[in-house]
Length: 160
Image (cartoon, rainbow, N blue to C red; front, side, top):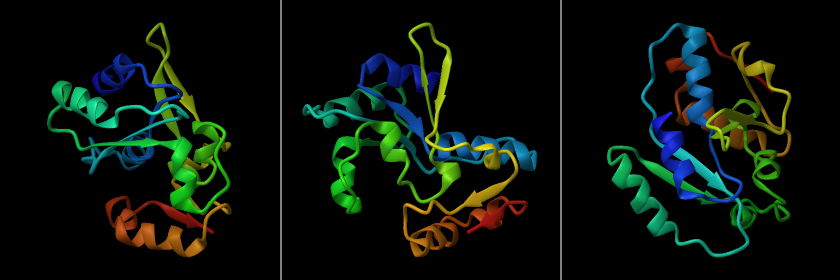
């Protein structure tokens, strides 16, 4: 909640903390693990206007200096990924390599958790890692291997 509050206080447009921040908590729950450390905390937002990302990262580091914050404007990520322009953060998540990674959370104006995903994702609670057909299968398989997900969470099942 502290990390969500920190990002919320900045006022980024169409923002979420996503990917492993949510996914790993669910997989830890399935495996009855207390908390697998995060390599980073992925903050996404969507803005056609230029935002001083260096200043945003500085603010986040002031509040949580030990967190490896990753800040990505989804309005530009289509260029790196070779996709058509994304319309918003939710649309950008449609192109993330795994269905279960394509989930984000943010705080509402009254501090309630708001979860978002472009997919129907009960599979995350069933212990699957599912290939997103919008991304190359080789990218998906490489990520599973590089991130050691099947070693860290041995009950997971790969769904191609």
